[in-house]
Image (tube, rainbow, N blue to C red; front, side, top):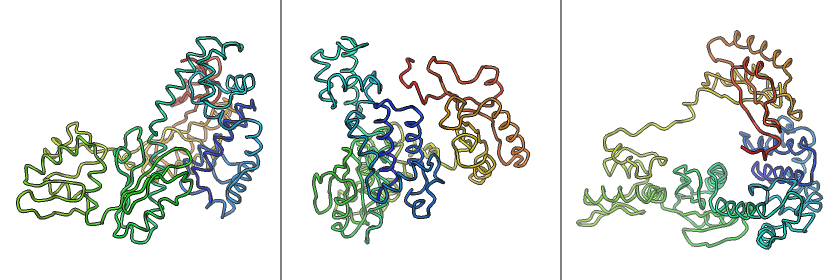
Length: 449
C-alpha cells in the first residue's frame, strides 16, 4: 500500500505535467497543496482512508480524496496514466533546470520532439534551439549551465528528503524480530544539509532476517550488494541506501564510528591511545596485554574516553572535543524549545481547523505565540482573504485572545502573494495594520530577483 511520500510524489508529478500542458494554475496548485499536506501529515493517509476520513486531511477535497482512494486501492491512477500519454513524464525532470519554465519546456518539446534531458543538452550544444521565439545562443548557454548545475546538485540528497526516507526504512527494520535498535549514521545523522547515500546501522544478534527484509523494501529498483552483515540497494528514484548489522553489545562503537565525521573520529582515537587503548568500530582494545572493552551505547564510548556524550550534529572537529573536555558543549535546539509558530493557515483560507482550535492546541504544546498567516486575496484556490474578511478575522482574534488570556499570544498576519509585476497583494496601508507579513510566491515563479 502506498505511503504518504509515494502519494505526495504522485501529486507533485501530476502538478508538474499539468503545468507543462498549460492547465490553469488553480488545478496545479490544488495538487501541490495536497502533496505538501501529505508530506507534513502526522499519520499515514491510509489510516484516514480506512476510517473514511480522507477529506479531513488539509488540502484534500472530494476530487483529491477519490484519487487517493484509487491509488490506495489499486496502486495506480488512471488520470495520471492518461496524462502521461499527453505529456511525456520525463519533461517534469526539466523543471528544476534554471531558466526553464513550463511554457518554454512545452515549446521545446512540441517544436523539436525532445523529451529527455540528454536530448535537450545535445540540442543546446548543437545550436538547435535558437530558432524558436525568445531563444538564442545565450539561452542555449543558460540551459547548458542549468543542466550542469542540476547534475551537481542531484549528486547529493537534501536532508529534508533523506531523513524522512531513512526513518521510514528504520521503522520497518525495527519491526523485525530480534532487532534491538536501528539508527541513521554518517552525514545524515550529523544532520548535514545534504547527504550521499542513506547509511543505517542495526543492532541484532542475527543479521540474516535484516538482510532479507532490507533488500525487499518497497520501491527497491535493484540490489547493489547483499552480504551476511551489509547490504546496499537503490530505490526507483535513484536514492541509494546501505545497512550494516552489528551485535548489540558492540553497537555503541559501531554507531560512533559510522556517524563520523572522519576528523572527529581521529580525535577520539588520539584520546584513546593516550589512555592506552585502541579504538575501532568494533571495540576498545587495550594496547598492552590485549583485552576488549565493549560498548553497547555511544554514551559508553565517550565515557570510556573521559568525555560527555557529544551530539552528532557537533561532530565535525570544530572545537567540540575541547568543549567536551571543558564541559562546555553547547545545548542544541530541541522541539521543546520552539515557542512560536509564525506560519499557520486556519479555515479562513485553506486550513481545516478554526483559529480557536489551533490556538488552544498550540498552547497545550507549549507554544507561546501563534500567528495566523492565511492566504491573501488573489490566491483564489486557497480561499484567500479580502481586506473585509481580514477585518472579520482581526475581530475574531481579539475575542480569542481575551478567551485564552496570557496562555498564548495570538497575532493577526497574512501570507501575502507577490504578483507577476512584483507588487504585493494588498496596499501598504493595510499591510501596516498587520502584526506580521509573509511575502510568498505561488504563481509567476520565474520572476527575476
